[in-house]
Image (cartoon, rainbow, N blue to C red; front, side, top):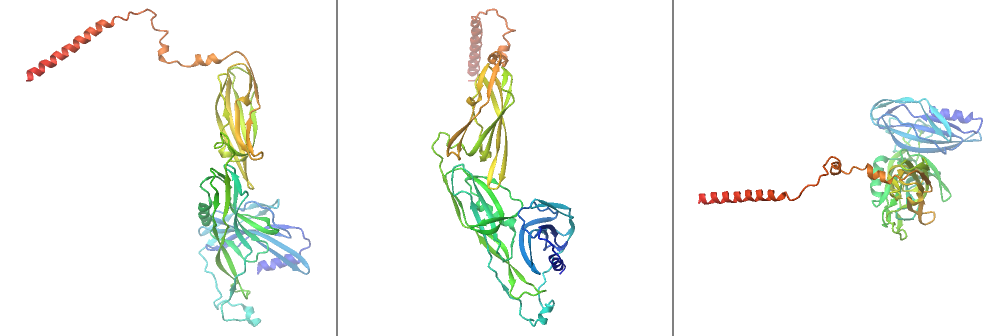
Length: 477
């Protein structure tokens, strides 16, 4: 009643039609089986964007729901659009929701927070004769039979969609799993045990023959979309980009999602139970993405597929022989960033190049996976001259924009002066202990015929052993 009175007061006293945005907190004393809510409320406007709802220690986020309401008071039209986050308490006790802010439609909206007391589970009250509608007798509608509930047809669906229906091996496509609710929907719906359901669903839909880039949706937010000229609120529950590893078609089967759907009372009363909870399963349609082989090429099984460009950085281009330099070969663009392999590098005696250090950055936004992979090389020129690094660094990929194989080549040029340093590498190498003895050994020639005496002594010793062996054998017999 308090909220209805406040709503009526604000509606009747409204002087303008500017958008008002506020944060409303639910009841701060609840049972463990009840939910606490944080709602963003926009009066005389829609909520087009908002950022993360606050985390509450001791509570789990159960997902968002939205509602819209239009009122006509004394000929004036006003509307309210709400986004509501539901929280479920993990245990009983007293918890603190600290002050927080939320960006809504580009405006910062603040809340002072509250203290939430969670008690034992609350038994749901039913109209069993102890709590009757006092207005039923007044209007002559008192009934002894239980309230009848009717099922309102929902205007909503569950769908898995992909942004492409056919791809090359290694070409990425994005799959989105979402629940859609039409603006015209009047059936009350709510997510049910989404974490557990989603874990089971992903085990089924994730293809085994693909590399996955998960968008890691941590919070389910409603987003307005238009489908066939009709407005819906889209609630994404999963989104990921997949990169096929072979030509086997990607098949996503039909999967189901249980949603809480409420039946409403046929004859609603002011104090009685006016809705009844039930579960309804929504199913997606099967989706298949065809995978085709890349055109013939010696490196067809190794190249990365996508749209990429080169950004190179070098700390110096004018140097002397023996002086080191650092060269960064940065590959950036859209595609499987994690699958990018180092460029083909040609190292010669004139220009010595060492294996690179590697860094990567992957961005997942909208339905695209973009990023940068950097290969940081260290090199030392041994001979003076001009070095076109395009002859040393090349990276081949399949360019989707051009639908053909393409090559990223270095453009940097080294100008090297000074004397040859190739022989220094031979001098600096350790040739082993055998060569270390050269300086300390005598240069005097030695006669090699002294081995004859040694052979006579050895043969005599062997003959003595044979004679002694024969003597002992005869003595035993």
